[in-house]
Image 1 (cartoon, rainbow, N blue to C red):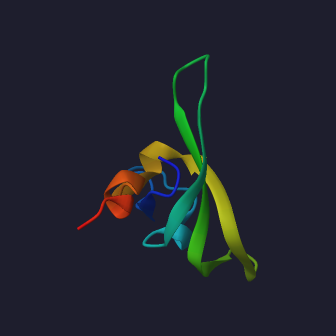
Image 2: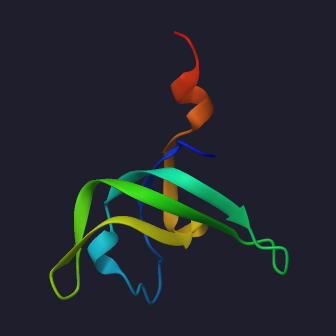
Length: 80
């Protein structure tokens, strides 16, 4: 999962972070919570995302279910 390229798609209902929809970045950290087995990632964005009050962010932490996986790290590292 580390290095995988993700696109933020958000949630279908009650999305709290619409500013991030369509943002693309790569995974820098992956964890699975032992209590509920939910997957979470830290992402570094290729282009900073302007968030709410005009603050630009280069990295974020979200649950993996908010993303579409565009490219896995294994595919990106595989020889042609």
